[in-house]
Amino acid sequence: MNDKINVSIVEDDKVTRNYYVSVLRQAQGINFQNEFSSAEELLADNRTLTGVLLVDVGLPGINGIEMVEMLKGRGHFFYPLFISASIKGSLISRAILAGGCGFLVKPIDDKTLIFSIHDVVHGGCPMSKKTMQVFIENLRSKKVSEPKKCSIEDSRSLLTTMEDVVFKLLIEGSSSKEIANMVSVSLATVNTHIQHIFKKFKVASRPQLMALILNKCGPCRSSDRHD
Image (cartoon, rainbow, N blue to C red):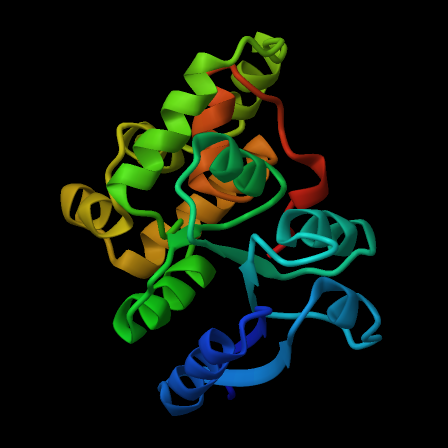
């Protein structure tokens, strides 16, 4: 059984793109697929996207966020992992709420890159504490219409007892590994519970779940997952 993670890249800077390609080709558990220098180049490709897509936010022409929204609209199922040189709150929020499963800030070392790819496909959301703080503060600063509270209550009522325990720990900021230690189950089991929670709340990542619980945005319909 081939359990390698398919990874493609969209990055306009040739030096940066070559660095990512070099790291991915040598990494264990990674199956490097394709590289693209622009959103337009990827959108013109007729192959179905799978696995993790590393996306530079600041692409010329169609930017990375717009590209992901377009790909989601075409029915592709993949994990967008955004990369940017900026840590601006509004940019992070747009990327995550567009379906992003993580947000990395340049420069990125090889260990962080590979760890983040594996983390994404196991239910994590790679993002530094500072980036997460900027994201949450940006949500809190905006006056956005609240989702119907019943939608949150209804979703939570669908959780099993263990999923509810994991849910509480998730929104408190605990990592998957910390949750596994606290409830005395394997990391794989915790990640399975997290994926079930995401489905029931109709979100794709932890930041999207946090945004929903903070009553600042509704479910991201275009990013529903069916694992």
